[in-house]
Image: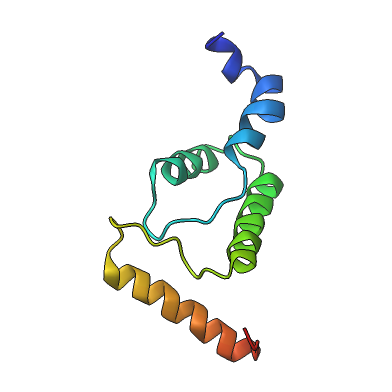
Length: 97
């Protein structure tokens, strides 16, 4: 059973879609983000599927109306930097949100 996870058909059709479900990304990389980054670096995730994942996470964050997923372990300075960057983007775009 464990070996079947790494067979290409199962990996591409079941494992990756389950791993790359949309969510609000935390400011600091968690274990899941690190794992996805390692798989991307090793070229195990197709570029189109990875970019779709990133876009869907951004859309999910915008739909929730939450700038970032604030965790108690997040560095307050990092949270502030991300929020300031997103605020700057909104001002430049002229978005009334």
